[in-house]
Image (cartoon, rainbow, N blue to C red; front, side, top):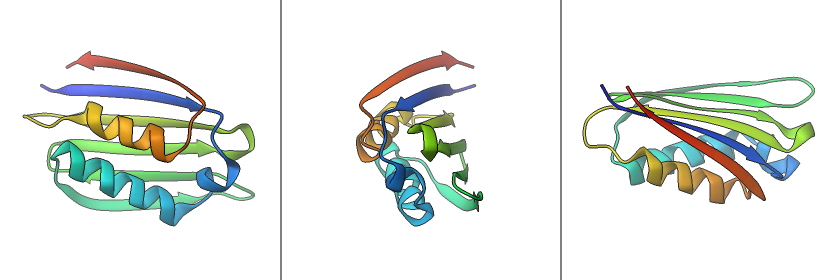
Length: 108
């Protein structure tokens, strides 16, 4: 079916994790470099902090959920076809300035 990547990020700056516009840009860039087609994006900003971004792809989906108060984020990137989600995950890890991360992948 496809490749499914899970990334947990730690030690990220509060301001980055709480910036909806920046996180949307991260998803857009990750999709471009991964060679997937981003069809639609939606987001939710939580009070007092935290953001969830969901991207619907022709190839499946991508998401970022953040906990700025803990410096943590969770990324989910599922694709089919010849996409390269691992490259997009690297982009997000770098852009969110994680000091530590864990990445997992399964073939579905």
